[in-house]
Length: 505
Image 1: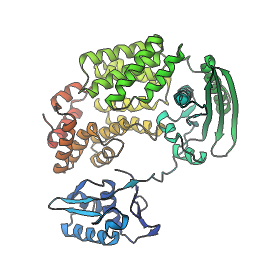
Image 2 (image 1 turned 60 degrees about the vertical axis):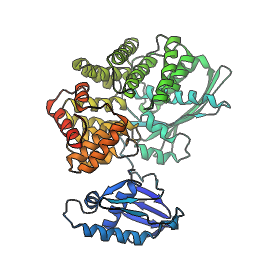
Image 3 (image 1 turned 90 degrees about the horizontal axis):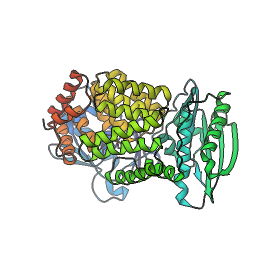
Image 4 (image 1 turned 120 degrees about the vertical axis):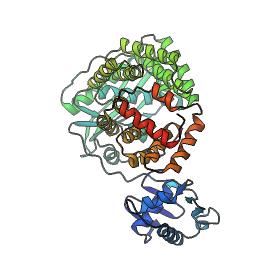
């Protein structure tokens, strides 16, 4: 559980600020005490080895174990009994004989007090989730789809910096000041609105706000036939671009679905495209139905391609058949809509795994050219660049992805951790891969390798064992043969870490 602010019992720990509060009253706790408590609380319930705790409190310094014992005793005295928090008798910090210590009791990770991100050197915008004001909760996906499409349309406009979907939807259902949201995301302008769909009609209210000055730059209401929904989206996009840039810079035309039912299915399936086999199967059924209703719907083919790919990952790794089907679907998506950056980067990623590297590189370049705001394309490109031995470039790409998508999907952190390992930034990789967002079986192989390279072999082997619980057939040899490596030195670096961590050869 990584982060900087945690609540437990009557306490709030802010490791970034170096403070501990008890019932809002500061507790006198020194630098080393804060570091120790942050390490323990940040991984509540886990056993932390003594060496790891000493590294946290005395980084780069050789100290005797007795110093740790003294600091732990002081922490226990300051915190008092855990019964004070109503969670039963006993201490907050438990000794695990001959190994280390464990923090007990419930811990809540609080929202970090993020520093405002700097504004980009161009007009910048985030599209907040449109509110469903229909009486029908089933229309929630329609409002979400409208939001996603506007994000996609705006991101393709030259001269705009547009925040990605994941980060925009982090504010869904939250009542927050627009200035705070804009500071969190590092943008100047926000688009917000509502949508009502009923009886074959759609009513959309939208307003564009300058969050820095507080000015309303544009607002309008649209009341149209549902069949005109995509024309309305184009009109809203045009109005926003005119307000921000003073003129319309039209991107290449975009493929639009001909079936509203297919559109609804694709929107619902996109929300299910995560890393669980159950939702992946449900999404597969929806997307298959969507392309049967609209055989020329490029975006549905794109997501179906990724669904086949992810389904093969869940089943233990891409099989030759699943790879072939996914690649065929991705090619079809690009053939239908060659101007869709999302379709391009998905094809590029799958081509890399087929080792069609020249074609993959060309498709990635075209995707970025079409939409430099496509955060997922930058993240996927980072993965492929690292495996090609272009580690510095890979780090730059994933950081670009995070700037466009400050609250991303978990696979961004996995990609960042992989890049940090490849760069020899093992401590940073451990911190990244232990975040709540990515600490799961699929990331533990890289976490184990990072710990092993730091010489923390017991912790590395523990992570390797956890990884193998979910991946009992994993071998380093098979992994190395199926990943799209282009650089022998980078490959050997990963193999060396896996070997040291005790993963099967």
